[in-house]
Image (cartoon, rainbow, N blue to C red; front, side):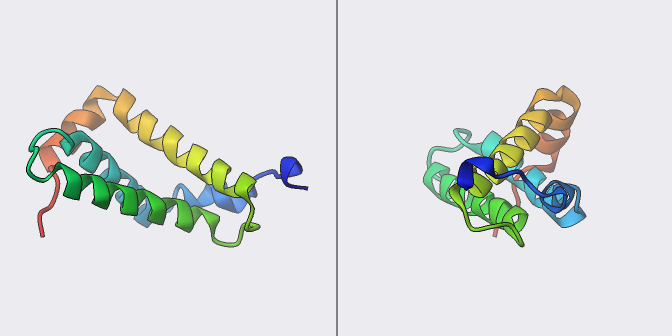
Length: 102
């Protein structure tokens, strides 16, 4: 039953992988850049949405294909992003790093 879904430890462990952490930081840099330049805001928002979907998909590898698992992965992403945004030191570092342009 979906309401009995409990995230696996591997889902939680995947949040610690260096590639996921790098993508997480990239997503927060994109978020911080929203509104800075109205000419590219739609493009940044689109890249942010794609990046967040990739982060959630990475967490879902090996999990049951249920809405509950997806919600849990999204919650882990939201919590990790909020943790970065709550740290003034991290926010200042992310702002210095900026958003890479293609």
